[in-house]
Image (cartoon, rainbow, N blue to C red; front, side, top):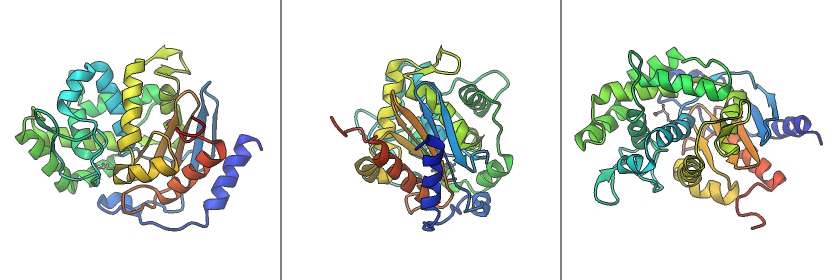
Length: 308
Ligand code: GLN
């Protein structure tokens, strides 16, 4: 079967699944259209296939965490980042007020949960006159190959109800993990989460991870091999929050989800995948997204440990 037909069949077959709930802790996300459904795939040499609502924009949310982690690991030394954020799966919800004494100091367990991602955001070098979120927007646009925008309604809505993320920020500041105003950092992190993407943007952004750090579209090296390996490692162990073990067993590829309903999955040297469907399970992962990813992993034999 040609790839587009295969992808269209996938969507048709999972239209019947209606489990899950819309995220409602961000008021603006509760009004999302639950029927939107899209999938995209990109190959190592940059061929992109997509079907369904593949031009529909949604806020990137936690999927951004994988790319900002890659950005700071590349800009700073890995050792410097490791001083601030660990790489241990937390087994806790994404928004847990989580700090852990793993070695000599107290720090967030990993960069894929909020405490770690807020810390990672604070490590982005601040450009003159610009907030860090703008640096992120420009970087994501470079990877996506088009100018991405902020969803200011989502940003505003999340900012007004950010009590939990603010508690995380203050607690990180208390332990000197954050070194400046926690409110400014948390708000800028929320703005990072509000960047609008389509599933096509997501696979374009991922092509750099599929291709060992080189952006296929331009041939430019964005990340070193070491950075890519580091990011894929934490995606594998922590990308699906406290459902990461289940995901690794059933789907078996490095991945990252977000509360607006997107999931990305990447098999280095082979493919990048992105799905979008807004209804979530109790871990905050897209129900139909998991379904579709699981099916693709089976059909294409993508599990990391398959055939080893
Ligand atoms: N902006 C959201 C938050 O910080 C992102 C969470 C998510 O996508 N899981 O709570």
